[in-house]
Image (tube, rainbow, N blue to C red):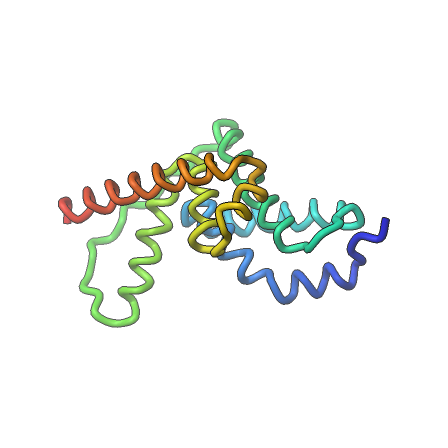
Length: 167
């Protein structure tokens, strides 16, 4: 069993860690520190199992991220609760900061979805995987991916419509 050697894994991490961190960020609902922790934990686990990986490494790592993210939320009740700071008053966003604000709004909205639904939306639309690839990464049927995508998009639309009314 050949698997992935240490140098190949190191090259993978060097070249793909930024994209994987973006995926982890969205899977963690916009929590940067949680995303870093999630990615680090997944890369450590994959490194230890790298010799058993038979296919391409990136889909394997993305599936591990999605699964670890779901597991993270299951065990969240055991964590020390954090108290978020009050948000600052919104300021006008006419420049490139508007794009940052939009990305933040999307990340927060994703954070309000159940973990599996969030994983489906992130893999489908952020990582641009097909329904079949998403189903394979999450170990579910394409029908599940379709229904979770539909329900997730409906929830996001509701969240965005509610925020527009509030502002």
